Length: 99
Image 1: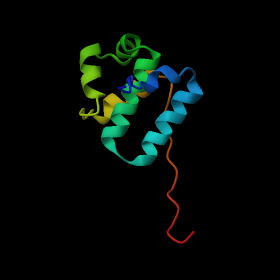
Image 2: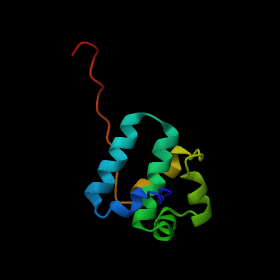
Image 3: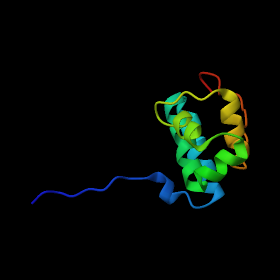
Image 4: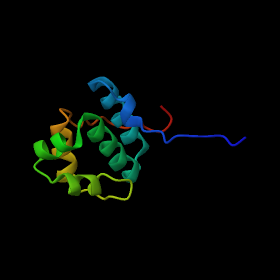
């Protein structure tokens, strides 16, 4: 008997602002630009890609493309998307080695 699987879509589990912010925070902690871009796309889909694209002043198609795992969005696009999501970046110092 073959095992049947279904695709996992994390967007289905991001049902409040705290979950979305936590998901993005974890993505930013990886330092992996492709994962961060994809995570922004996941959160935008969870909120509604059409509305996020409109609020960010971008076309839905270009937003999908920019926020895919193969996308490479400009920093300005990232800031626009975060603002449309009602989020902002925060900076904190890295711990020094040995601390």
